[in-house]
Image (cartoon, rainbow, N blue to C red; front, side, top):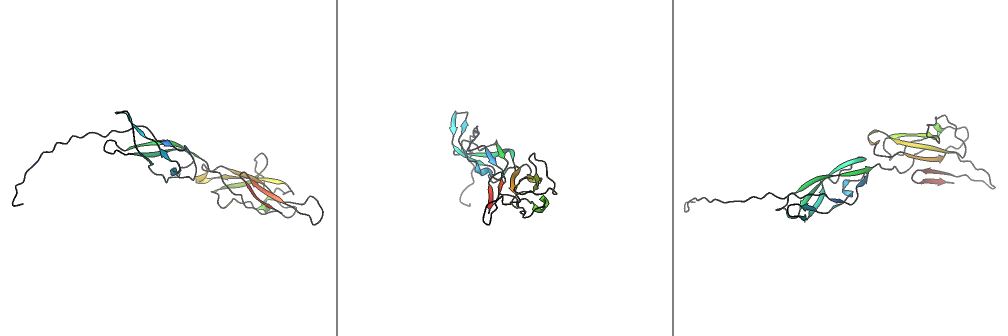
Length: 209
C-alpha cells in the first residue's frame, strides 16, 4: 500500500433481461386418489421462447410434491428451471388436478348370531378400525335404516352402510355390503353343516364352515 498509488477504473456493463419462456408441463396423469402425494404425477416437456421461436430445455418440478390434496379440484403449483439460466428465467405456474375420493377396503366388525329370537342390536355392528370417522347402520333394500329391535332371521342377508363424516367426509366414498348373521343348516344327512359368507362392495371378507 505504501508503494502504489490508488487508481480507479470505469467498467461499462450492458444488462439484458432474461427471456421468460411460456407454456406448461405435460402431466403423466391429471387425476389422483385421496391419500396420494402430488409427486405421483410426473412432469415433463419443454417451454417455449416466443422471442426467438424455439423450445427451451429445462426441468419441471412441483413446488411441493409431498402435499396430499383433498378430494375435488386442486390447483397444483409447478416450477421450471431452464438449462440455460443465463438466457432464460425460472418460470412458475399452476395446473388443475382432479382428486378422486378414496374407496374404503375391509369390512366392519360384528358378532354372529347363533340362536333364534336375537335382534340386530345383538350383532353389535361397528366400523372397521382402519376407516375414518363415520357412522354405520343396518338398512333395508331401499337404504332405510333398520331399528336395532329388528329380529334376525335365519339365512337372511342384511345390508350395512358406512358413511364417512367429519373432516374426511368429502375424501372417502360410502361403503356397503351384506352379511348373513344367522346361518342355519337347511338339511342334509350326517352331522350337518352351515356356512355364511360376508361380502362388501369391494371383496369377499371370509367364508366360514
